Image (cartoon, rainbow, N blue to C red; front, side, top):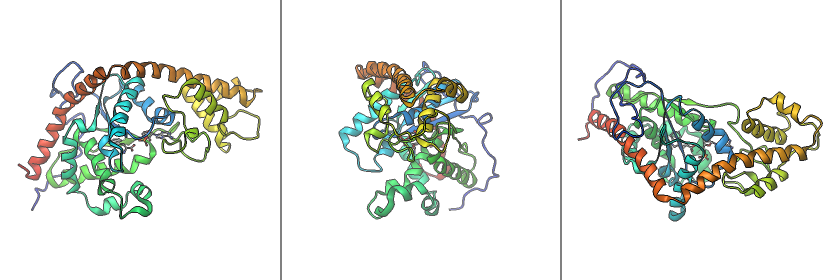
Length: 360
Ligand code: AMP
Ligand code: TRP
């Protein structure tokens, strides 16, 4: 098949004619030019969301809702790239969605939906799978780490996981993808896939870029500050967003520090540095202010203050979470409203793609 050769030109958000995400009360997308850049990000419904997810990702999504046109997605199709218990997956998917709203994702300003609600994700993935060289996927370091010695037995889906992620992003013509450092290579791949498709078939996709934050990009495990806080490690390593106050106090009291006394931001003292970083992010104070506040005080006092500020943050989240958990119909309605609002965008992109590729 010979593809039409088109001049390469990067689609800019400001000049493309992609429909703008309509306000929450509209039923379909409008065709006005975009005023703000569009964000797309996803989070997997596996395990328990923790303060690492909150400080490294969710908090930024919440804080920057006015700066962008926002789309957030609970990626349950990504979750099944590794074995899942069906009932647990269902529960975790809804729990994470409720948690994101509870953390402050505002349905009036942001779309938040579950990946499987919009079938176009899977359909675009197949087409992009057929356009993506094996060699590009062979270079993905996350697959190498996750598959390890099990390369022969892990699913083909785990291997093509980054193509599904590319489809998520490209379907909505997103400009910006806020993620942790571990996802940088996947966003680059999405960009390469968009670029090569545009070359071969003519301008179709916006080429997205990753947005990676420095401070808080890596919150470390409480019981081992050399490792990233992760929901797949033991309970003592993380603070779950649903942990009650007494559990927070106990986990912080037991968190690894060192045998020194001063409470200062010193990266070579990984344990206390990590706890101070959490305090800094939650209190919005400067490092100097915090060091002054705890000058001459001991770890016990600092840990009590840290536990207090974590508990205060979680209290608000947990209260809103409890409301949504008690009203599943409301949660369903919010998710459906977002999915219905986004579907025309996804359909529009997929229609273009199929047309260019020659799929009737
Ligand atoms: P995951 O839980 O791996 O699906 O990650 C969801 C989001 O939270 C991604 O943007 C991650 O980069 C971020 N994240 C996960 N763990 C941490 C951590 N320990 N510190 C900071 N950000 C994290
Ligand atoms: N792979 C991402 C992670 O594990 C989650 C994800 C899926 C995502 N699709 C996405 C992130 C699209 C950003 C954009 O964290």
